Length: 336
Ligand SMILES: *Cc1c(COP(=O)(O)O)cnc(C)c1O
Image 1 (cartoon, rainbow, N blue to C red):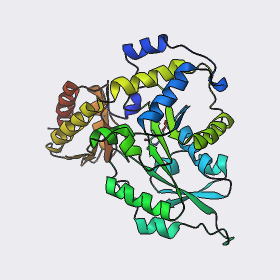
Image 2: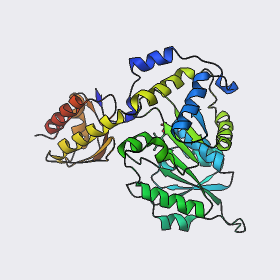
Image 3: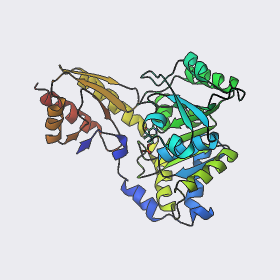
């Protein structure tokens, strides 16, 4: 199956499994798992921060970060379509008693700075308000890289108004590779940054939250409270370290494949395709019955989420030969 549904479908390679088999382990809740300690400091260094925390998922990473920044009754400002507002089951509100203040967001992941400024409420004398403590950005947002000058302007605004900054960098790796910057450059200026190992990098599980030692110590306590204190997690941490060391540069291939796929699909009558400049292709299907198009593709061994507008995600399980096969299959699936 050529599976374009997400880059989370990537499976560990044989080399990654060998690294997992060889991993030395200890009890991570005691701080004694060498593989976890190594992954945390390695990732923090790579992102230019003091300390790291290995967590079960990107959702747990964002949650423990928001809880490290905000107290009960505070709020975080976040894009209306951002993962850490819309797709995390309301965790910050439910588990942290932290109110989200969603802000209108455009499809490139930006929010108007005026809208952010107008939503900040942090005068303690105003007893009406939850106190704004944190601004969250997301990079990439749906495969799109936030413009560096936008990030700097938003960071400047947040600093001027006394807000801390968190970056949901689940796909920060794609942003770095796609804009020829180091991971540390993309992470610069944020107090905490969350990165996923389980997406394009291809580890089976795990994310790392990085930031100052003080913030990471706070997040570590919340991680324990939400049930994320793991024991001999070195086995999975080894997969994460292997993923960063061996799969980061390969994201460029995913980006090339996405560009080829977008160009090929866009030439087909009845399809409009547009690449995100990283690993995603957005496709609009004119066919009145996109589900039937999806069924025809499935019969050809290609998995997509069938919808009038859908997203095809390239990753290390997809080769350039798969791209050619997919373009041909899409042509057949829309009756050409
Ligand atoms: C995938 C993703 C996450 C975290 O997802 P988990 O499934 O919890 O690991 C967070 N933010 C963004 C932008 C994501 O794409």
